[in-house]
Length: 314
View 1 (cartoon, one colour):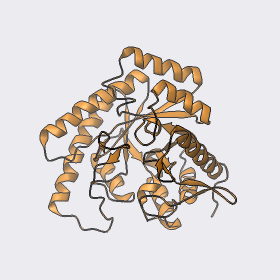
View 2 (cartoon, one colour):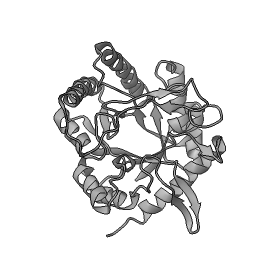
View 3 (cartoon, rainbow, N blue to C red):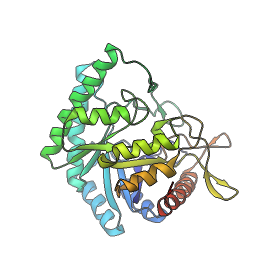
View 4 (cartoon, rainbow, N blue to C red):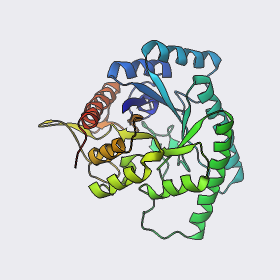
């Protein structure tokens, strides 16, 4: 497995400090010891609206010069809206995202069935728009099914656009629409019925479903389809015996990465593990700076590399 940095980590949204350009983040990835960079198509860093031809050439040149692979373009799609213009706007955005991937020579684009969005111009740090996260055991009602099928329609159209460009999509197991765990995401991928669609499977998004049995089952059942996976750099701390996990913000416990990654390796996954710092960086009740993001990414990378190099055997 290889390791990549996600550009949202240094987008100036969740810490006290400036955003780093994609070119600067290529250099940051090399400085911190990553093999690759995943580019999230979000302002102020990497919206396709802002990256002209010369910008794209500069990013490609910097990645080649630093030996950093541009491993994925990460979109922020949302096809679940009942408002047709919003769905059409997302398809227009996805055309721009797919063309950016072509221009940068990146064959993999991550997609969401639905993405709630960020508010980043009201407070000192960005915040996620509230949304119903759902429970994996909840019964589905007609309104849920309508949202599911709207998402399917948008993803199918995007997959067809991607296929025309020789690109592959990775559907991430992120709420809303998709409930916590792997089951909904795997079902949606199968119902999409597109050969150029695989999975982005993230263990933190299993929420409290972190038993050895469950995370192994998820990796085993989905392993042949997994094209990308993320881990959060926001809950690592210095412990008595080195770097360890603190509570995951979404459910209050550690993420059970060890059996998850070991099972992914057994399934043959040799792609990227992508580090993201996508929550407010608060230290001693103050917003942290770039140095704190550097430290968090370095600690998380050291922890995850140790797991990959010494996989769990049980």
